[in-house]
Length: 621
Image (cartoon, rainbow, N blue to C red):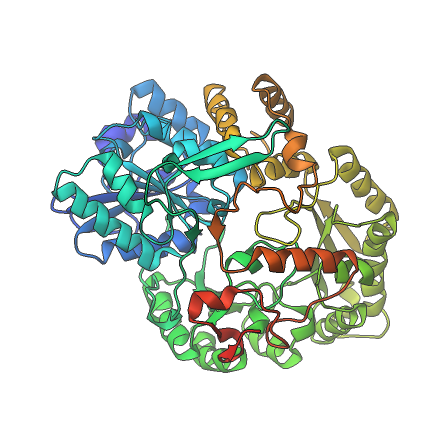
């Protein structure tokens, strides 16, 4: 725990000092004084959000279990704490020891969201670390970054020494062992980074050179040192039963976004929605056994005292042992009055019996994601659900006593028309009418259907990675069109700020030239862009203009199918050929079956010895 007396003058002046004191139950770490390597995992957002992140808990546990690494945590401070750190001349520090970030051997960031990039740069600056990789010396920490946004690392490449591509439980331990060996033998920073680039799953931006065409597209992307690989292959964990799970993680002092045990059931996805990056980058599909999950859950509940378990995965109802898992959890969760939460329910796999079982402790609202309001557009995005299935699932929920549903949609999807937008309102009204079509338990309460609509953002490694985002004006027009189509107060309409989605698209599909924009954002004290009160679209547009960057080049332009994309050097297993075929099929509104129904030969099986684990080991076609 930090030296409270030292930091008391700061903590007494901030709104939530519990964010910065450490010492939570379960937060013990190996002695930093005897560790051969010291690492600090940084989450580039507030404590409440970072403490809800399962990945950080897994990776800090992996490091601390080695016996030679002492791994601590750090989170993005709120502006009141940032102001106090600067005022008192203190650098940003790790929660366990109170030591500044610049004394660690490794400082690692998880990149979960593009609008957190400014926070990464801000944390480096507050931690006393030179911002640019090119300016760091032998005594500075090695800066590592991973997570979903690392699949296009280029917009933040100048600030990061090494990117970890893929799952880190095994890969990061290999990297740490290399850094440990180099530190022991006095190997230079430059040579250490070179050796890291030779490990599978690691990208060192300084060892690659980018050239551009006159029209601004990428001309070439090549290694600038002999032996450096031309492509970086992502790492995966094949056997999830053997991977580390943080059953005894620290319990936060403050209420967090996800104040519960998060039980990861599987990784990957069998579905293939064409807009979804996670469904592609996390392939192939791999499951954890119900026996291991049950044991993990028991230990985690006993250790933390939480009253809820959330089964987390991309589409939980695709888990082949879901009934078996629920049946093993319920006897003891019911006895302890622990609630089970099943997010991301897939409409066509909606189980009435399962719903009734998990409602035995506490009924909560249900969330479905039709994504589009018409069948044509659902076929375009390969959602593979019909309106009949949607209505049937909602009817089962109503029959089971539910009267509150949340539906996720998107606007701005490729080929979308006004009729598709109006279809969202029509589908929602159909659901309301279904509720009132017959008398039900709790009928007098009425029904509430929440329609939440986000803006489509084209993401790397999806069949829609080449598609243009609608202009800001068009996105906002469609938002108002839908608002005008909703005629009942039984439907609550919420929509995302299209301005935020546009900046997100710029950084999602950006290249290395955006690094100068992030550096200038740091100079202008721009940070916490994921928070409404600190995001300023006008400031970003002014900044881009001052830096000579056209945001429409990245967000609102259709990329050429033969164009070199900023992320093309990364091999996620799923082939570019497959992505192009899926993009072509979307234009014809043709659907592709899920992996269990028929293998589509996406290529992900190459990551697990040619076997398609999602259907029990059949050869990929």
